[in-house]
Length: 208
Ligand SMILES: *[C@@H]1O[C@H](CO)[C@@H](O)[C@H](O)[C@H]1NC(C)=O
Image (cartoon, rainbow, N blue to C red):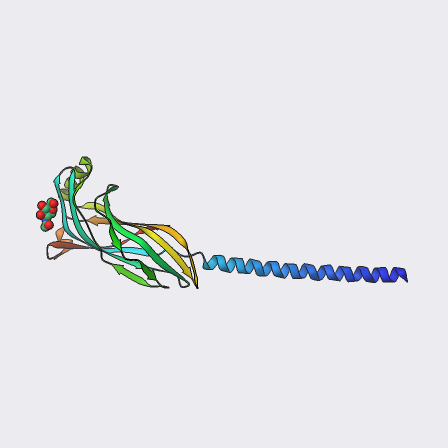
């Protein structure tokens, strides 16, 4: 009799542990699923940037170590995410030549870019009588007479991601756009007032 009770108890215990195991497995699976879904949602794609055109009003080297720049660029920006919104903050644009900054920063107003939204920015960027490295001044003068100048248009700022009602902390964003200005071939540009507009349609690199 006692034996029977004992084996009966053992069977109950075994079933209990089997059930516990099954429940733990299901819970672990659900947790894994929640983790994977959250990870997939919170893994936002970088926004896309395209430098559409640049209008050059002035790019003059009055002395080898002095540069005056005045241009306007059109920058297209798109949020490719369907579940994540992007806040842009402290975004500023400037131009560099051979890694040297040649213009002041131009601020772009803070903006929220919704799911799949597009923004077009047309900032003026300029620098009047900016001191530059003399070898850069010489290289620029030479490049200008040789036909084209390789500028870079850069954007730096901060982004915050918005998922549902949750907004993340700030991340730095750096955008670099190649801007080859074909001075020698003015036929490719369109004269606009005192400026010449060049169509560039250049995809920019984005790092976060
Ligand atoms: C371009 O800049 C130079 C040097 O600062 C200046 O002398 C010239 O008047 C400017 N040209 C235009 C069209 O603004």
